[in-house]
Image 1 (tube, rainbow, N blue to C red):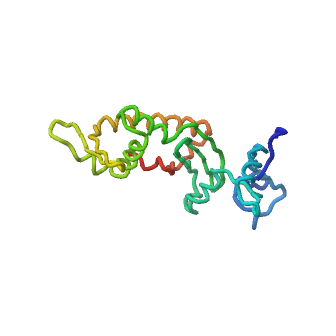
Image 2: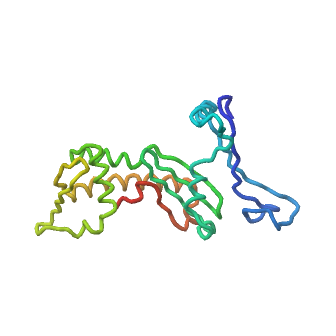
Image 3: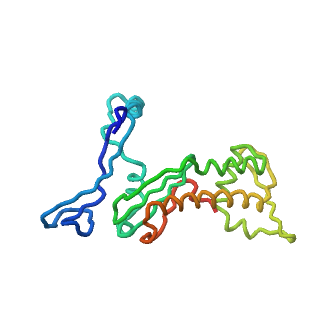
Length: 217
């Protein structure tokens, strides 16, 4: 750990006895040699100080949790924890990837882009404001199955969309679909390359997609 960093928490990953199979709890286990693997959560000291400055004076942040460990506790149930699961959190500015094995956080990584990148593509491709692009992305993400059936005879799909600012814009849905699909496929390829580096793909049961971007078609 560098001089400007500190270890704020250790997350238990797994235990084993006599170098055998890994397990989550030592309760009821017997053996001559206990081995434990932990994930050290390291934070910049200045970041910890800033966090404590922003919360009420009567409170102090004594424990810090990684995003991956917190999201895993929220989204993974007991059945999920029996398998190897990749949790992909597609946020606004980052895409976070965490792989859990038998309920333990085995690996995590973060990519410096997310659904805001898709929003910016829509702004440029369809010449909309950022707010209009956000509304469009949310609306089409939630209603894509209904919209895809709305075809006019020549095969082009133009849909008039009314925005919160009371403006109405005719949207070329095929162009929108191309813009979003291209960027989502690019993000997906980056995500898979990261997961592949963890060398757990042979045992991977499934990928769970969460976050705001999870609603995208």
